[in-house]
Amino acid sequence: MKSSTFTSADRSNATDLDRRSFLKTGLGGALFLGTVSVTAGLGGCATQPAGRLDAVGSRTDARYEFQFLTRDDIVLFEALLPAMVGPGLPEQPQARKRAIAGTIERIDAGIHHFGPANQKELRRLFDLLNFAPTRVTVARVWSGWPNVTTAEADAFLERWRTSGIGLFNNGYIALTKISNVAFYGYPDFWHLSGYPGPPQYAVNALPQFKNA
Image (cartoon, rainbow, N blue to C red; front, side, top):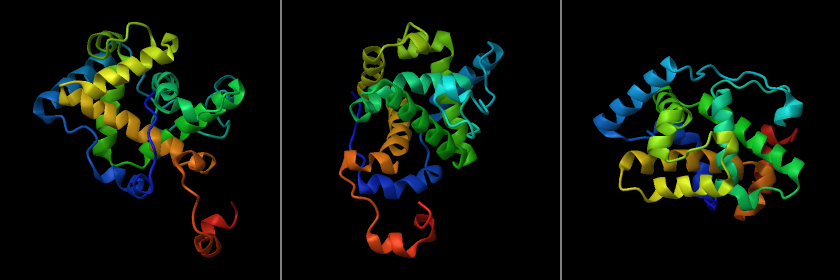
């Protein structure tokens, strides 16, 4: 499993994610990702944000409207999150589904506030993983993401983590970083990383805590 401890340093850096480049691929990697995005678009991959989803089927908040992630992206993260944060997810099936859905909503909300450069890089990365020919060739994932087991997702992440190709290493870092921030940065899961929550003086002083 690719669960990692979400430290206070990660929390303080979360607001700076939009100022940094997730995928420092170099010219060759950038051209490759750009070609994939164009090819994926021509091949019919959905690139429009998912908007509002049926809350019953997806376990999402019916009020939430996806502003960046597509339906394909959502399915991708549904497959990857159990491998990345699996030990922290609730064991009860319905609670587990809700935790995954809520984490995906927070991933979307976070990316929506990133700068255009990082949004563009992430769109290319997601297209790379959603487009069947490149999913098979560079991720070595043969099944569509809805059919991928946690063990298969874990194996894919491990291949990219240990790859000698920088593009794959940085793709792994991007996927795990945004997922861990969205999961371990949520108050319900602070305890999993040993974070005790904001100090009482902050709770008393800051208005955002008063209606929490």
